[in-house]
Length: 210
Image (cartoon, rainbow, N blue to C red; front, side, top):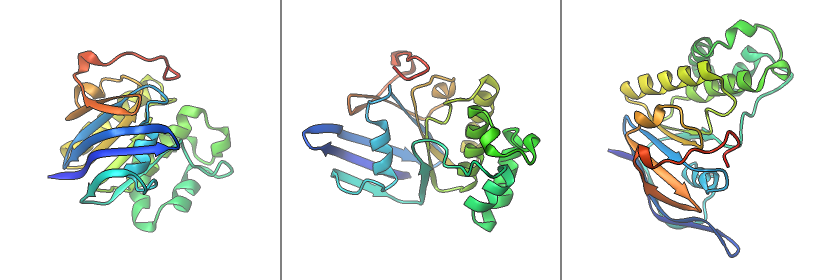
């Protein structure tokens, strides 16, 4: 069963077409990857999927709760990891977040304030919080950004293991990490247009997504 389906979705800002006649679907227990350089339209597409952009042409059908955050970690920098988890999440989600924090190695920072974290450690904490929501479909915006090789491997393992347990993910990224080899659906986004792609078709972008 498809948890979300987009059919011929188009979004324009003035005369600029940012998302151009896009069709996409993500099924239950699947990992779908939208791969593309910065400025290709990935962020606006995610905002449409998350219902943050409501006015667009085309059809969007959603059959589950969809959760995600775009534009980077929204963390309280004056708080430590545990305080962030307890401030952002509901009581029922805290244990799950603390488990993910352990998997990502965040717990070792103890009472250290997030302001003193590296970019990669903030990303690990952010991922622990987002994954703890356990939505029907989890949307991850550039989740590998800032992660070192260890962090990338941990995230790849977490996503594939969670997929095996029935969770679904849509991952928007400009970074090739090996997850694309495991994806159930692989899309390439270029200039607002989306198409099915094979692994060998994907270009390699710089760390900055260019």
